[in-house]
Length: 65
Image (cartoon, rainbow, N blue to C red; front, side):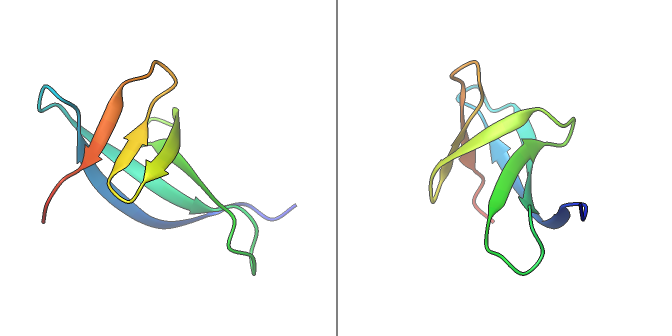
């Protein structure tokens, strides 16, 4: 099985201003399936264009560039 490929990284922050890096992965070459993790490999869920959530329920907002 081919390894997933990193597409890009998103700088995010929680409600306290703590910063996180969310990595967006392409799971299968040639398809548009993606998954998300923190830099340490923890799973992240895509909520909408500006928010990700952690399994703990903590929300991460994309930082403005």
